[in-house]
Length: 80
Image (cartoon, rainbow, N blue to C red):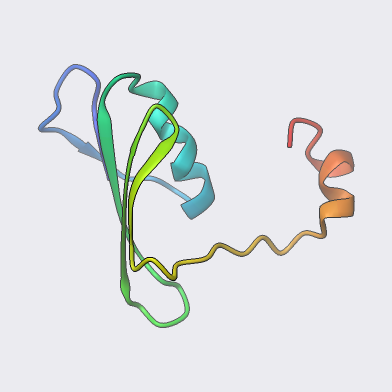
């Protein structure tokens, strides 16, 4: 969930884990926090960002997985 630009107390839901990382560019100069859960084990995941920079990642061992081979990114996703 992320706060709106005009109302920091208001929260929004992010749809996908990696897409939620791009949301910090919508709130330049503001710190955003994303709370999620691991789809494998259900453990809580929290990250804080500002202007595309990661400020906190808990747990620090968190990794992301994209089930598309890198060689196919350009064909299917030209902006990747």
